[in-house]
Length: 449
Image 1 (tube, rainbow, N blue to C red):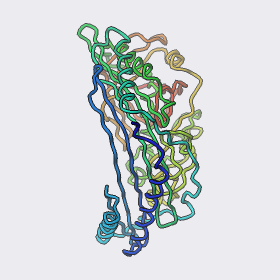
Image 2: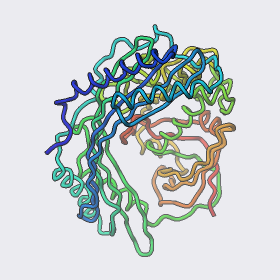
Image 3: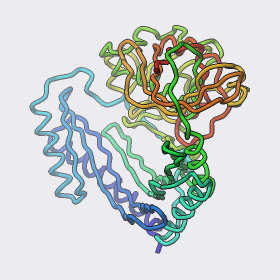
Image 4: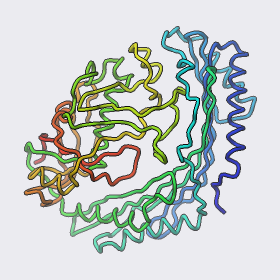
């Protein structure tokens, strides 16, 4: 039988809201001047297969509650997975005891009441998938079979897996905020191994969505995983050189995440960012616009309010190449003397304005250079912006792929890379909350043989 339904969603939502309401009253009873809490539960199904055989079938059910209390500007936090009334009272008591031993922090406080989300739109985030274990196994097997049948050089598999989850989260605080809503997330992925002579390669692909109807087909996911694997066979190393670099779309998303990390409030007030004091300055070419859409319908990162209960809103992070805002929650905003931007918990549905060129067009624009399809390691210095990552991909000449490459390192500096962005493609073909096409960077160092 399917394990995820909406039959008890409304009843469970009401029960979780009551838990938060009772918790806030208990915090006040114990002397807290303010309090905030979130509580949630989830249920899910995960199946994994390999070489046509079932490896795991896992049913999951989780609960969790976190509470923070304030005594003036002293705060304490506690959590529990037990949602019984006694356990909730104990969690509040533990948070209050912790607050007694903390120092005053003038920025330890809730957001102002007028900033709290009051209207909660339906963002179409909940689409339970009525799939049972047998159907889930069939889809995973079909995905892996499509990959294994794609090319005779596919000789082994790391398997395919399918997951489906329904969760409900409720948040509230003593400024009058109390809201919650259900969400779903479904995914299917596959990874296979190819061999040509003594050369072996591995690659993967995946699909994820709020609604099962928005997932790519099992066949297409498997074939994409196999095609990516086969294309890497015969890879070689490059000699050290400088050349233009084209980051394939799903890899370019990591560059956007590096930008977000650099302009997050905690990095700024700690003075540990290479974009410190760059607010209002041009950091990209004038054609670049980067923005977030936190209330995107069915968005994988959508939310009507942030972790502080503050209403989310669409905003430009970069417009005409100029940095427009830092990414702030209530605490980091206070530390910087700025208002919160409604980003407690991060950026939601990050977007960069895409250009007119597809990937083939970007390769022709580049002429000769490196197409990066995979990055390894964590060689990013957040303070200086120095960037050095292991990479694999393809060498391009005359706008055409010549051969796959591996065991190389690409290096540069993120400030120079951002300023040297030549074009953003329209080839966004991967799932996720961050949406971008491929990025063409004018020049980087490529270290190889």
